[in-house]
Length: 143
Image 1 (cartoon, rainbow, N blue to C red):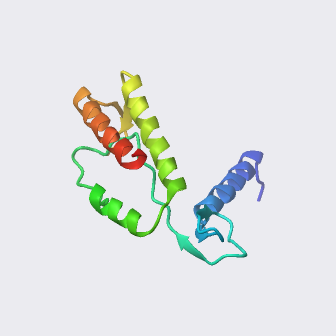
Image 2 (image 1 turned 90 degrees about the vertical axis):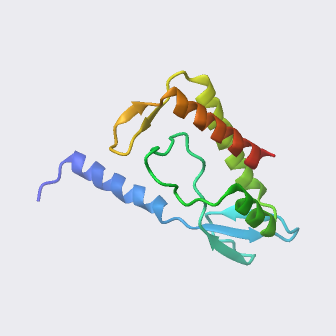
Image 3 (image 1 turned 180 degrees about the vertical axis):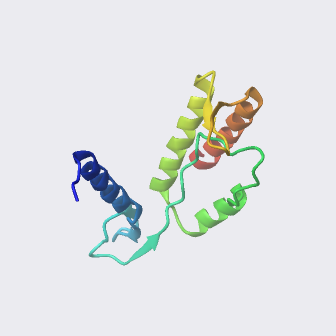
């Protein structure tokens, strides 16, 4: 079977792209009690394998779709406070929330993909709702 260079490149890309999908995230505490997250398994500390939550998205959900089942702000705060301080993950979520808010406030036209996969411009009402949601995310993750 003759393989073209494009086929070989495609196969290499597919193999390398799936490697990141299976990466595990490890949570561990150092000797000072600080919580750390890493993709490398710690050798000197006990660890837990955790699933990282997705960051807040600039792309809004389709208004016709039901809620995704995410926890409410109050239940998320309770679970975060009971599990100890998780500053690095919260800082990343804070930065993402601020970046999303800035993007919504800066650009006059914001595009997103609707449920049929088409790229459409967000209506002004939807944009204002997303700005309010982003402000709540900034308050939650940054304060």
